[in-house]
Amino acid sequence: DVSTTLSSIVVASAGLVSDVNVTINITHTFDGDLDIVMIGPNGTRVELTTDNGSSGDNFVNTVFDDQAATSITAGVAPFTGSFRPEGLLSALNGISAAGTWTLEVTDDAGADTGTLNSWSLSITNPAGAYVCTSCSLATPGEATGLLFTSKTAVSWSAAAGASGYYLYRGELANLPNLLDATDDSCQVGLTNGLSLAGVSDPAAGLEWYLVRGWNTGGYGSAGAATAGARVHDSSGTCP
Image (cartoon, rainbow, N blue to C red; front, side):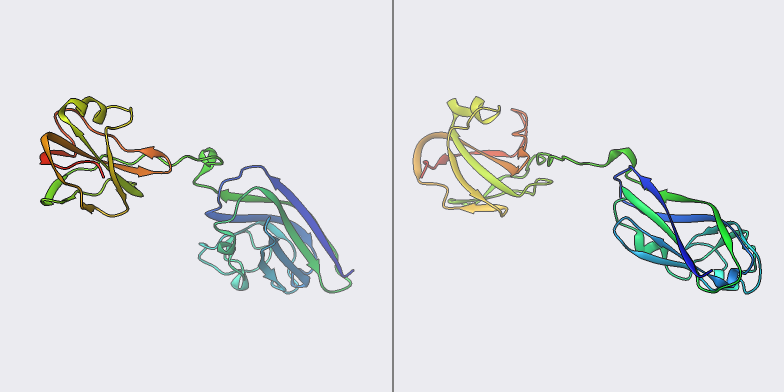
């Protein structure tokens, strides 16, 4: 009889799909009557085979694989081996593997009958168990190459992962505060670029400048006392 059979597999992994193969075993006395569709958890439908096989019998360990050498339309019942489906299973790539995967088998003609004996999924998921469900952005790397481009402007090299940069200044006595996690002596400015102008008014004494990358994960390293992105200059006061 004309009818549709639905069979489902529930997948628990929440990783993203990078490849899907489907294997089926069906007993049927006229394969050309069958339309078979794979339905992903997001509702995407992929045509595996439609009316192929003519009066041939059965699908026996038939693997639908986008990378197969032979199309299902060129195969012969019982289609044992690997075949490219009529649609593209790659349409399911990039979705979450988690959820209900459904095989839809429709017999669209009368007289002949059959049985869906078994089917299985092979899902490639490179993320595997390492899927991030609650992630924090890593703090930036250390900015380097801090130098004066004029008496009132400084520039520096990019810090990996930085969304912006804070520039600080302190007198020599404040240097320890510029090198640890405590508040720095003086925040001169914040910029998304790699330079800042208007940083100095003449002031007495030796002063130190420090730039630190910033993003939503926190602040980048201030570096070691004998290295890192800092220079000293005898001019400048906090605005």
